[in-house]
Image (cartoon, rainbow, N blue to C red):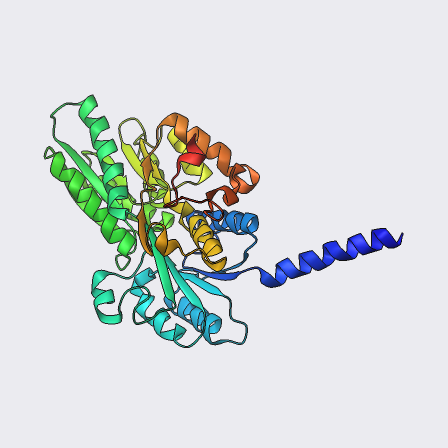
Length: 361
């Protein structure tokens, strides 16, 4: 009996010791608690944190810039500070978050949108004027916009080689780097297909209902439009609803692109109503957890690929890859062991291998 009690006490002590030593991370999530992309982003991040023994707290800003800054102030200047703060340069808020961090003792890491070159010219880069800003990791948003557009335009070219065709575009929030860069990718693809005429680009703020209202006006205004580029899946669904109500058939006489990883958009792509689908960047927060886990254990990711990295996560999916991604998303923990992506104890490993591939194989 005494032996059992001693064993139980040892297990409890070890668990308590691990809890005390676990790195604590707060993520300032700029999205809404009912926004599929940012919810899935947080879920993938939490799956990684759980595997890696990280105590993660996610704070949703509900698309409210002032609320996000208030949250940053609470985290960085309040009495219970985490070891790390992960943030997004949403609406170019990065410099103010860095200012709030001065003297806090909290290490900062940027995901998705890091500070622009102009911003860094003023406040410095990672580990410079703000030495506790230890790194950043982003995906190539321009490439995402390009891949969606190119895939859609190539499909149209196969259907009607060389014929003129009209397009509409639905972008996100104008003040976000992601929207700007995805638009640049769209324009690069359009330059390769001079027979395609972009009739209008509107800002739907990543929002399904706003895109729906705008599309109700745009489709009657441009009845010859056959292609619709949408910078995310929510806007695509809003435009698709408007099209269907106006007698157009998504996937048949009107072809849509979309970006993201929601089960809804994956199923829409598999049934053909979405013609082009790009995904991948919802994994960024999870991969950031791997970097912070290793950094906290004494392995500096700056020596293994650099302190600032742009990861090629975006992929234009085929139907088999979309089906595989859907299966992974619907499984608890995404059927991944995030510890296998750590470089701890791996002699000779030079860099991390982050990609969408483990979820689409």
